[in-house]
Structures are given as structure tokens and as C-alpha cells.
Length: 367
Ligand SMILES: Cc1cc2nc3c(=O)[nH]c(=O)nc-3n(C[C@H](O)[C@H](O)[C@H](O)COP(=O)(O)OP(=O)(O)OC[C@H]3O[C@@H](n4cnc5c(N)ncnc54)[C@H](O)[C@@H]3O)c2cc1C
Image (tube, rainbow, N blue to C red; front, side, top):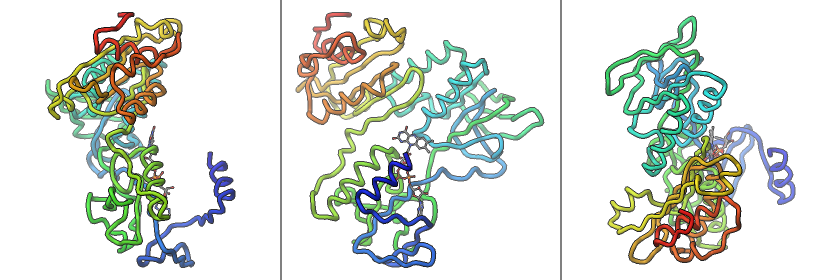
């Protein structure tokens, strides 16, 4: 992939300089001994998870996994919150090869930002496969031992110690990597560069822009991609487009996978919508049966007054591929009727989307 990007740079005549950049003033960047001047400067330096503090850690397992802060660098490897899927995938892999796995989660759900039904169903699925899940639990101490790691956890049922071979840690907040210089100093969220998102990601300095992770959540590659395009088009005077943050898909690469876009049921209700909800289980899908991937379901949330799609939530083997259709549907303000009557090929996992829309209006045929 890196080589591909290098060749794209050559194709588009982009000069790349490898080195640590420092912004000297509104139009000057220093890289090594060189000073580069520019009409506009675009910061896309990403973020990194905070360092684990000495003396405390959290996360657990026999392989132990959790969110928090702490040390034991050799024993814990840190990641980031939206990467919960990454962590879950590691855990699943370990569990599948016979390793006992314990997951410790501070919040009451293993996927707290997803729809509760999806998070609960994934939790049930993992528990069925032998993963121990401790929610509402806090890792208070982690230390290396001759045989692995000792992890102390406070659970609603009381304190307990776990002694896994390996402990993986997932931290909750992030900060940008290096100080970029006074001109780029953070004026908003700690560790980030504050920008005007409605105005092309301009910072407090009119010639300096910032996109991607450094400009704040959601910290996702596809978000950084779209922000970059909007920002550069604005700088070049080509368009005034903005990113639609209400239509950002989120994927969790677990087994089965999780994908969603838009509002959860809870958020939609809290926003005052009257809802019509359609569900379709993969158990009733011929394609899922043929692939022996019948776990999970599609859940579609519609506004009852206008029928507009407000949110889509999928748990299933093909979830992360299927969600794109619903991002498009949401972008085009599709209704349940429109999704139901858009012909889906048979046999496919995607038929479950059409069926869920049908169920929302009482016209589902296959359940
Ligand atoms: C383990 C992991 C899994 C992830 N999984 C997913 C996923 O499945 N889907 C998804 O959408 N997102 C995922 N993400 C998030 C995704 O990688 C980021 O959202 C995305 O890379 C942000 O792009 P960016 O351009 O803002 O920053 P980055 O991709 O982090 O790029 C920033 C670059 O700037 C460089 N840099 C920093 N400071 C300086 C400086 N002073 N001078 C010069 N260069 C500098 C860095 O070295 C880096 O190369 C994952 C992230 C991690 C770590």
C-alpha cells in the first residue's frame, strides 16, 4: 500500500519530504534543516494513545483485555477506544485456539457506542463461546509476575485478581503526537487542534488547517479521507462541501462483525422520534444458512411519521460490507418503502436489509 501511495504522489506531482515537521509561522514549516513556505498549511498528524502511567494499569485476561490507564509496558499493549474491535478480534483468535480469555470493560456494555441490542447479542455470542466478560468493572492494578501478569479488578460483585499470561490494554483518550509549534497550538480538546469544521477545517490561524484524527473524533480513516477532500477543495476554491457527521459508518471487526450508521434506538427515542423498527435474523437467510453464518441480525430504525431511515445496525458475518448500502440509503433520505422495493439479489446476505425494511411496515415475507 505504501508503494502504491508513493507512485500516486509521483503521478500527481506531489513532493514528499520525510522528516518531522514543525510549524514556524502561519506560512512556514521546518523539516530538518529546510524551511518550506506555503500559502496554506494542512496538518494531518494523527494522534496517539496516552502513555501508560507508571504504577497503575488496567485491562485483563488469561488473556486480559480492558480500557484504562497504567504501566506494565511489557505486559500490556495499548490501543484506542474505537479499536475495541481490534482487541475483540485478538481475543477471539486467542479464544479459538484454546486460550482462556477474560474481557474487562468499564462501561455496562462491551460495545457502549453501538445499539444495545447489538452489543447484548455480541456479548451473548462471546459468552457462549467461553469468553468471560466483566462489565462495569475496573482494573485497578497490573503488574508483571514471573509467569505472566497479575491484574486486580473491581467488579460489581467485589474485588478479584486474575493471573493471565498476557494483558492487552485499550485506552480511552488520545492526543496528537508531537508539539507542532505555537501556531498550531491546541485551543480546544486537549491534545487536538481545534478547527472550524463548517468552514473547511480552518484553525485559529487563517492559513492553517487540520483534518483527520488530530482534529478530533470520530477517529476513523474514512472520516479523515472525507475531511481531507472537503478541506482541500475549500482551499482551492473548488467547493464549499462539508462532511455529514450524522452519516458516518462504524465497523467493529469481530466475529460476527458489527456495523452501524446513524442513530441507535436509544438515541432516536431520546431525540423525540416516534419509531418504526424492522429486524431480520440471519437465521432466516438462505445465503447465511448456506455459508453457515447464521448468527446476528439487521435492525433498521425509521421515523414513524415520514418513514425516513434514522439508523441501521447489523450484527453478522457480512455486516461491515453490508453497511455501505445503508449509508447510501441514509444519504438519500430513503424510506422503509423505498428500501423494501429496491430489488435485492438472491441469495445474498443483503436481502436481510430489504426484509428488515419490510418487517418495519408489517410486510416481511420470510419471517
Ligand atoms: C490499530 C488501529 C486500528 C485501526 N482500525 C481502524 C479501522 O478499522 N477503520 C478505521 O476507519 N480507522 C481505523 N483506525 C483509525 C485510523 O487509522 C485513523 O483514523 C486514521 O489513520 C487517521 O488518519 P490521519 O491522517 O488523521 O492520521 P494518521 O494516519 O495517524 O497519519 C498521521 C501521520 O503523520 C505523521 N506525523 C505526526 N507528526 C508529524 C510531524 N510533526 N511531522 C511529520 N509527520 C508527522 C505520523 O507519523 C503519521 O504517519 C485504526 C487505528 C489503529 C491505530
